[in-house]
Amino acid sequence: MKRRIFIFILFLVIVLTLFSACRKKESVAIMSADNELLNDITVSDTVVTDEDSDEASAKDTEEDSGKDFGRNSDKEAVSLLVHICGAVKNPGVYELSEGDRICHAVEKAGGFTTQADQNYLNQAQKVTDGTRIYIPTQEETALETEDILLLTDDLQQAHAGESGLININTAGMEQLCSLPGIGEGKAQNIIAYREEKGSYTSIEEIMNVEGIKEGLFEKIRDKITVS
Image 1: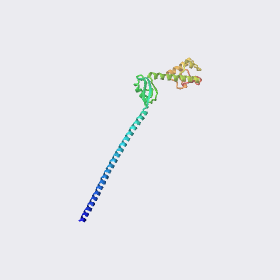
Image 2 (image 1 turned 90 degrees about the vertical axis):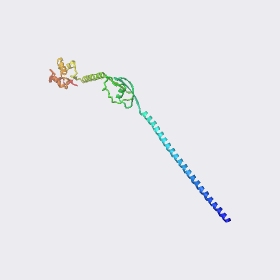
Image 3 (image 1 turned 180 degrees about the vertical axis):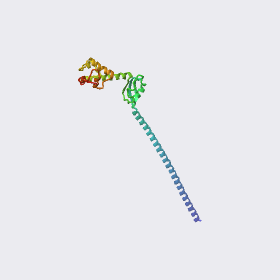
Image 4 (image 1 turned 45 degrees about the horizontal axis):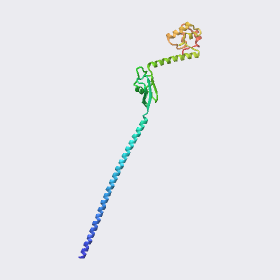
């Protein structure tokens, strides 16, 4: 009887021990599962946080780049002041951009007037800061051309006077009469010939004038010119 009781008690102890061991294993498994879940959540939060941080950093970089680009654009947008006057509708000082040309300045000033000589200036020429652009009228450029021609004639005559030669294309009666063998009659014939035929192209052509032959030409050839 005592033997049976002892065996029963031993059986209970073994069962309780096994049951306790199983409970511990389940607790450990549950704790392990809980720890893994916690680690997964922590890692997930960390990844999300890192992604958010990267996105925020990228956004800040883009904004900074945009600001820098804006500053660079402001630096590159150089403005120029030019004064345009003369034969334009609205003369004055206007603001242009770097690289603009005279045609842009004319456009700013309302365009040409009807009297403007539009071909006098190179409209494709670039303008620089502080430039003064004057658009002349057609009458002004015509007078300027006449002045240039008169100046050219004066220079030619002065050159002839300095060289001691008389230009038979421009000389008057008094100068022609200073030549040996040339009186008023022959001087008048020299003038009449160039008025009728045009300018002399060579000094030898003077022998075509009435009253001037080879002998007289030899006397004056070293004293006359056609340029």
